[in-house]
Length: 326
Image 1 (tube, one colour):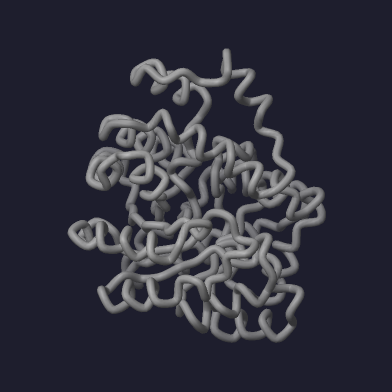
Image 2 (tube, helix red, strand yellow):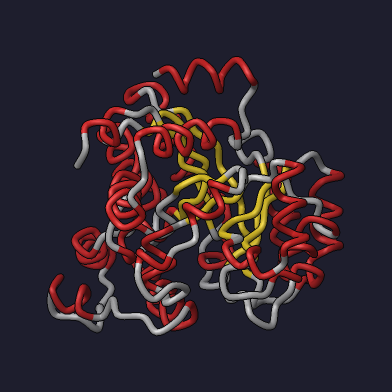
């Protein structure tokens, strides 16, 4: 890995904490909690990580999350990710979590939130990794379910900076959740949303106009609508792009086909992120390395991407500058 990638201060803005569940930890937690996995070894789990599309990944993702049962489990999961951040010069991270994945199987909201936020606090104190937490609604579930989850989150608003939208994109447009996002903004939450990964550019427009999001998660299909590209550039709406994820889920056939460099050259505020690193083959630095190799990115490109990550973060200007310097 290039020394520049290793040493550049970076922020990560698109990481699903449940997606950092490495096979080894999956086995450890399954044994701790007396859960029988349909795999006999770590190698069998890794062999199952072959995805045809977003849904085939999500099926395995939700199955793996079943091993998370206690506050300690969520703490250990988050702490392992933060240690990776510290090792890869990630100075700030804004972590997604999916409470419905856990509350729908009977876990109290507080167990999930308490475990994650305790680890985030420890990461600030012991690893010098700044962080925020963003609650994501599962878009394949109903808007009523999302509203109920928002209600559950209100007592924890001092620990949750914003809300987002993830899970199965096709057939679940952002407009489905307009009332939920209206309520979230009224309560003081910031907003983001997955759009334009498998869904069309219209989903990006809906996220911007109806959900009034501050940034778009993925957004790579914006290139199909030149007016949208112009809008994103003019307003500097950040895109949290996830290169290894995009290739693993067949959004692009190969990394050489990825449009990240094109978006960057068009002046968009593109950032690099790992999405679900345990499933897609790498954390933040591995994503930087993959695009540098495949797209012939210059040192100036890599530096711009790192700077964009701080510009796009939910941080004060002073904190952006402080963390970007490292």
